[in-house]
Length: 373
Image (cartoon, rainbow, N blue to C red; front, top):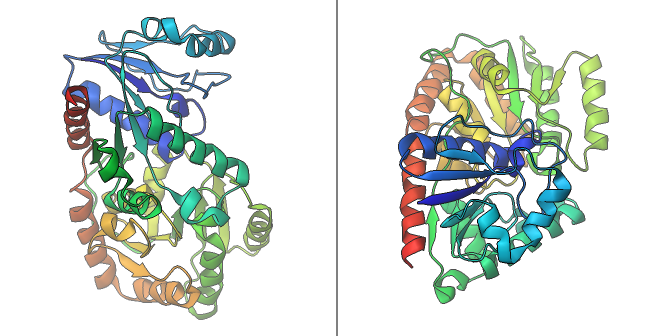
C-alpha cells in the first residue's frame, strides 16, 4: 500500500491534531514497514512558511514529499489536479488530519474528525476558526471515502449535529482512539505529596480556566498548604482578560504560567504534581487526562463529552461549572494520601488500555476497508 499522510500541523507549535498526526504515523511505520509512506508537510490549503519543525522519520520506506519545496511551489502542486497524484508519490490512500480535505484524483481520501465543537459550542471559538473547521468538515463529507473519529463521543456528537448522515451516505467510518503522547521514562509509582496543581491546555474559553482560577481562590482560603497552580499551554483566542487575571495571580504566588511546554518537560510536570485538573467544557478526546494517568498523576476532570470515556473509573469527576466542587476535591486529595494513591494506581491501569500501535493497526484495517469499498 502507498499511504499519503498529512503532517502539516506538526510543523507549528503542536496542539492535539499535530500530536495525533505525529504519533500515528510513527506507529504506522513501526508496525507495517512493508508499506510506502509519503509525508505531506504541506497539505491542500494548509501551507506552512517553514517545515523545519515538522515530523521526520528516517526510514527507506518514508519520503517527505515537500522537503525541499518552497511554499509557493507547494501551492502550485496542490492546485495542479491532473498531475497532483504523480507529484505526491502516487498514493493509494491519503489520510487528512488538519481539517483540509483536498481531492487527489486516483487516490482514496480518509479524513479524521476530532470533534464538532465549532457547531456544538461555537461561543468557545472565534468566528474565523469556526468557519475554517466547518468548511473543512463539510468539504470532507463531499470528498472523503471514509472518516475516522478519535472517540465514540466524537462520533456521537457528529451524529447529533447531522442525524442520519452516516447511515444514509453509507460512508465507512471507524473510531480509533488516541494514546498518550508523552510517557514516563521510569515506571510510575504512587506519588508522594506534590508541589503544585497542574493544568495543561491552551488559554481559550473551552478549557474553562476561569472556573479553575475561581476554585483555586476557594482552595487557598481553606488549605494549610496553599499549593500554586502551574499552567502549561500556549495563548489561545479570546484570552486577553484571562491572561490579565493570571498575571495578577502570579504576582500573589498563586499561579505559575509556563506557556507552551515541550514533551520532555511535560513528563516532569506530571510527575511532580499533586494532581492534574482539567475542567474543560468540551473535548473530542481529552489527551492530557490520559497522559496524566500514564504518569501516575491523580486526575480531577470535567464529566463532559469524551472525558468519562477516556478516564473510566480512574478519574475524580466534577461539574465544570462548579468552582466549589473543584476546590472541595483539591482539599480532599491533599488531605487524603490513600485517595491519592488509589487514584494514581487506577489511572495507570486505565491509561494502559490505550496504545498507539493498537490504534495504528485499527487505522490500517480501516484503510484496507476503504480501499475495498
